[in-house]
Length: 294
Image (cartoon, rainbow, N blue to C red; front, side, top):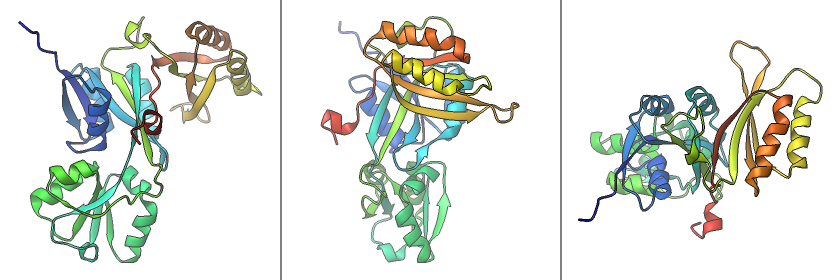
């Protein structure tokens, strides 16, 4: 008898039709998944930490709107490992109930990050007197408009959400930049305490975090050591440490070709840092244009 594949429970921020769901389906392509929708990122991490999901998928960075800073602190506090990433080309559309035109829209609902990605379009609509309403999710905004028959209301959402909730696209690709990408991290529901072998197989990228002593040149020393070991630093993000004014945690993304050399680099910077933690070791997520899916 052929054994059925075990379904993975994957927590996402948002509902069906959201970009998080699109990214989850793409990342886990070929595997059976059950998506667990969460209203907020805090809910997503809560579900993961209590063991109600195998993985979570959370946006951390957008090429237009920047970083989602609170997610870095949620990740650090959770003590859960990052096991992968996926970069998604995000196309934003203004969607509404069928039979309407752009001039009929008096208010627009969407997630704050989506609104930031479409700032030029949003400013134009504000000048026309259109009310802009922040919501918890792009797709949820579309679903509410559909279910409650809100004529005059539009949502900024994906093509998938428009199709799923039987809405019309009034204006397509309203994001500020056609090179609009969001990077999602895949987070395991298993604690990163101890040796998590899942994070090591085929890894060529890592996320680590640390704080630094108040000494002149402390950060430049760390960066110099990484350069010596030929470790590529692709991102650095500082976050304030609550209760310790003007002190920061640094989250850095590293790309390496030699895992052993990367581990040597971590050992070399450890004496220069405080509270050095490896948040995750995983395979680098390619940009859509690198995979031919742009």
